[in-house]
Amino acid sequence: MNLFDVLSLIGGLALFLFGMNIMGQGLERSAGSKLKTILEKLTSNPFKGFLLGLVVTAVIQSSSATTVMVVGFVNSGVMTLRQAIGIIMGANVGTTVTSWLLSLNAIEGDSILMKLLKPTSFSPILALIGVILYMSAKNSKKKDIGTILLGFAILMTGMDGMSDAVSGLKHVPEFANILTMFSNPILGVLAGAALTAIIQSSSASVGILQALASTGTVTYSSAIPIILGQNIGTCVTAMLSSVGTNRNARRAAAVHLYFNIIGTTVFLLGFYALHALIRFPFYSLPIDELGIAQVHTVFNLTCTVVMLPLSRLLEKLAYLTIREEKDKQDQFQLLDERLMVTPSIAIRQCKLLTMDMTALARESMLKAMDTVSDFKEEDAALVAENEKMVDVYEDRLGTYLVKLSSQRISAEDSHEISKLLHSISDIERISDHALSIAIIARSMAEKGIRFSEQGQAEFRVITDAVREVLSITEQCFDADDPVQALRVEPLEQVVDYLSDTLRARHIQRLQEGACSVEHGLVFTDLLSDYRRVSDHCSNIAAAVIQLQHDCYDTHQYLGSVKKNNQDFDRLYRSYMAQFPLPQ
Image 1 (cartoon, one colour):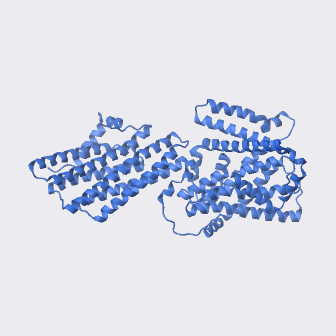
Image 2 (cartoon, helix red, strand yellow):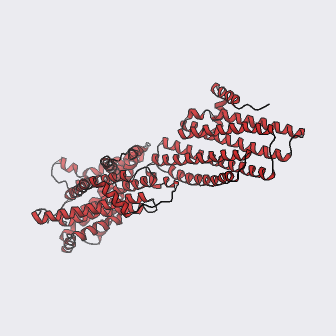
Image 3 (cartoon, helix red, strand yellow):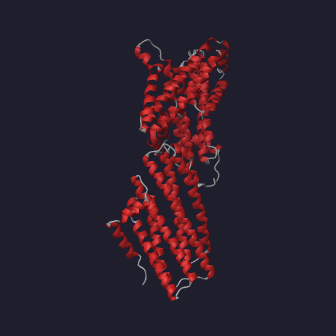
């Protein structure tokens, strides 16, 4: 093996890894959120979880990606640890599909059919179709199919290049001697684990082993421990992914590691015990690509058959390793970046946090309005504390949603992200106005400012109207109900009418000398905050309605909803009757 063979090997390996990567990405995008959202429809039945993990991994061609996804689900609370165990086991079996695809290189025969089945025959055709689809198709799904075909063709070309580059090794005695070392089970397992840990893909490391096996110098005795070690090495990706997560997510990564370590130990003990008794005839024979695919599959199926009934023991072992302590509760763990590969689930987590944010802002506003008539320092402090928390919500949610919007997402998911981004800004502003009201109320209490009986009666009416608009807005946003959202704008118009009328009455009292300027400033500032709160409620309702139709134009919505709209007029008159001002 000379320098040019080494360069060919490096080039083949690079093409192989690149092809596997882009094929996996294409498969993942083509699968879409529908395939991945089945992961949230789980039961505690490990067998169902196993089937789900098998299917998802077979589709996206990466057990590491599936396991990292599972760690994210457990970390964000979408999935329990018990549900994750079955999926992790299924992922190990699903990853064997790649080795079977690569074993097609071992097909031999002189007939046209057998020659056509060899990847070197059909890969160029797939590459041509893939290029045409990728370059000409405007439909994203067709582009994804083109990416898959291109990735597969590049992968197979890289595999063929690696096989050609190492073909001369069969005449090198030193290479055979090195492989003999790996007949030692411990060395073989360590070598397989190290290779997989470095390249972060058991499928890729199995492919490299298959390329070496094409030389005819790799025996079953050397290959079996390496294959088993490769399954342990693939756990590194999930372990790294679990850094910084909560305890259950770290336990999920630990289960993945324990499953492979225990499975490898049991399989090795059973295999070598049987070999000592009956002497397997294939033990010292050369293994080919098909043989490696078979061993890889038999090992993973055996581990699953042995370990699936013992899933509860794996769970207990994970709990013993990572002991239960009181985790500091962090509601923002729902915004796990691992979930971005499943946008629909990530959006659902964002919606849950936005609903919490809405409830917090509404609580602040209600407390703030209470302080106007009955000031309590603890209520004002709570409003200030909530306002800081709402600011954090806006910052964390906004950052996460912007990142999420850059992913390949469906039109429906895009609409939901737009709605959330529009709404969190208005929700935060409601909290700001609540703090402003609480500050005004504190100033009133310190200066002994108190409205007249007439002023208090008038203010109770607009306060009740704002309470109602807040309640309806929260309900329509949480339920994503455009019908309920249509009730907000007529009530917002009533709040505007009340604000204008109360301001006019206040000016009249100023002119008559029945009200001081200081009282008047406080009164108008409060009215301004109340009015702005109802405006932000109107914006949130508009987002719920408008983004159902793939657009967001508040002015257009407000113009259309008021113009010759009998339902709007009916609701407006109803609210006017519900919130009459005292004469």
